[in-house]
Amino acid sequence: MRAYREVLVACRQSWPFGLSHQTRRHSNDSSSTSTRPAAWRRGLPLLWLLPFAVVFGLFQLAPILWVLINSFQAGGDWSLANFQEIIDSPFYRQSFGNSIDLAVWSSLLGLLIALVGTAALRQVPGKVQDAVVAFTTMASNFSGVPLAFAFIVLLGMNGAVTLLLRDAGLIDGFNLYSRSGLIILYTYFQIPLAILLLYPAFDGIQKDWSEAAALLGARPWQYWLRVVLPVLTPALLGTFIILLANALGAYASTFALMTSNYNLVTIQISALVAGDIFLEPQLAAALSLLLMLLLVLVTAVNQWIISRSRYE
Image 1 (tube, helix red, strand yellow):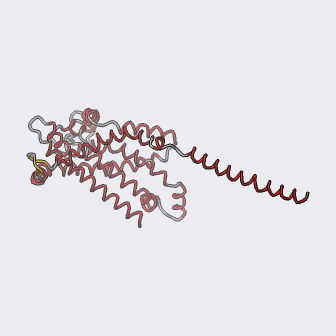
Image 2: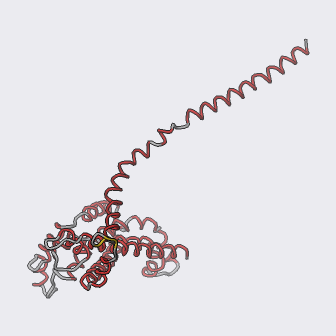
Image 3: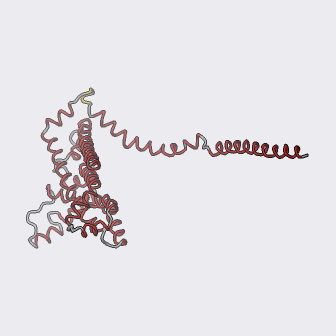
């Protein structure tokens, strides 16, 4: 009787655990199979991205491909004649010089003003910051023909602000329809964009840094020069590149203000594809390609500087 009980206990100890192990393994296999997504579910996100891919291909890749192909076409054959004509022409070389000149000066001035403005904005209450950021977002979209018309009304030859400043003796001989006027126009629409780009970068600056610098005997200008600016350097460089690209590609405001009286690359491209005298889309494609290569070069230099600064 005792032996029978020992055998029964041994069977109860072995059989249920063996069965539960198999059942557990079977349940694990079935649960892993049920939780594994089907193939069509894994491909569903790609299906949702298809419209965006189509739009990107039609409005980004296709124009770039068209510009790349047609820039090397001349008379129906593959040729470098378009680039040779641009290099040999003082008129087109001047257009690149004027575009780079306006872009660099407006980007530097806009970046400097935006840096001071963003630093001051960070010192005001949160509600005021939200209101100013909302206004800046709206101002960044105010460009093109309306912006040019507003400048004509305010700073034109007989503009309201021009007449007031002239009567006060603060300006003499200011001309909106000149290089200085264009720099002011470009700087105006660069400032809101620069503020929106620099505003998040100030989140990386801790408030106790200034207190620590003051305890160590640093003056405010030393704190900004040796602490804040090194931290903001990547953001400043990136913002400058975006402002530079924004200025190099500007067209509507400049054309509405100057028509064809100021030689810029964008105005020449427009004249070659939609002019009233002659149309040379292949030459316009060559100008566009050189402008894109210029932006790529500037961006590459910016990335190299940022990588070097991070490495050091």
